[in-house]
Length: 241
Image (cartoon, rainbow, N blue to C red; front, side):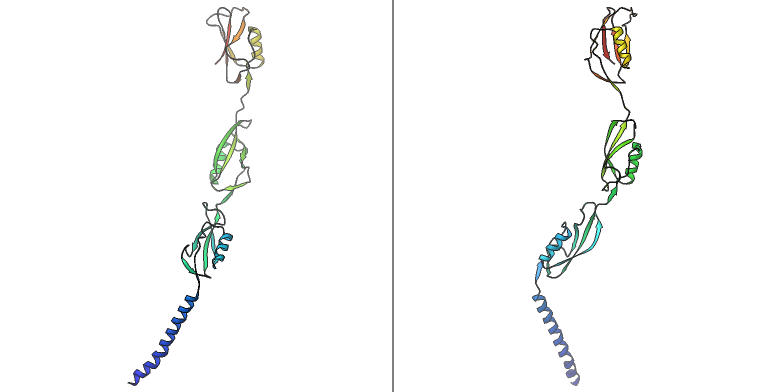
């Protein structure tokens, strides 16, 4: 029976220690206040720290990560999760967005449109719109928005202004009651393209007066051609081809 007595001498202190430890932990845990973990996702870091502090919690940034869909300095992930009961004094760990990548817009002025599109494609920049204006540098970029050297969001876009061939224009003169020779002299002087249609009859050299189906001061490009119709009676009609 001696061994039983020795065993009891050993077990009683151990049991007392375990019991006292359990009671101490229980008292400590019961004495600690708890709070509901706030939802700080989508908040800026400074705002989230204030929210956590007001709840008796701390907030630490674990790391930053590149996110094209979340603005810079906004929280994307948190641990512990939101809306669960936690002890005051605990730390909320968060991951924060660095925002989308910024890229520098290349200088495109003077480049052919095809080459400009290739350069932009390599930088993941799209052409939002292409505007064409008459210019001596036809087919080349003469301006851009934003300008070269500015920074924009990756996968953003630019507007290109591209030159096209300059087309001279002329204004139809007031030719009513003008004689044929005078009309032709005026057209030659203004480099207006025209041709004469005698309606199957040879030109008789008769002095005739001109009238037009087209309102005076009508604007034409250099590609337009006026047809001067002279009928057998000597009357003239002017129309555009």
